[in-house]
Length: 86
View 1 (cartoon, one colour):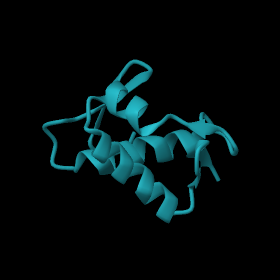
View 2 (cartoon, helix red, strand yellow):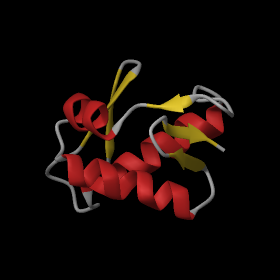
View 3 (cartoon, helix red, strand yellow):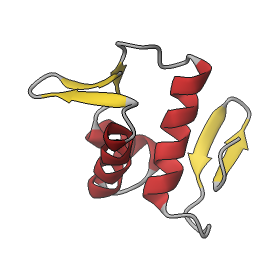
View 4 (tube, rainbow, N blue to C red):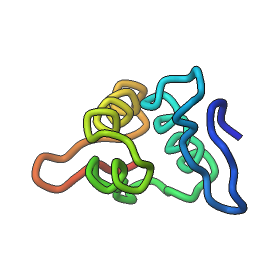
């Protein structure tokens, strides 16, 4: 389990009251899905808007989480198409 997240059965949610920044929690959650194979190579990652709605965070928070995963080489962005697992 990633630091700063709360497990609810098979669903993981963001801990809005925790010390870990929301963008880091979201990035760790997506990283975990990539490493576990739930998001395999080439699979499209949910959009910033979808992530924001699903996890109750601002779109900018979702963008920062995805940006950190791009910097780590885990995902790549394709203009006009989306973000994909690298």
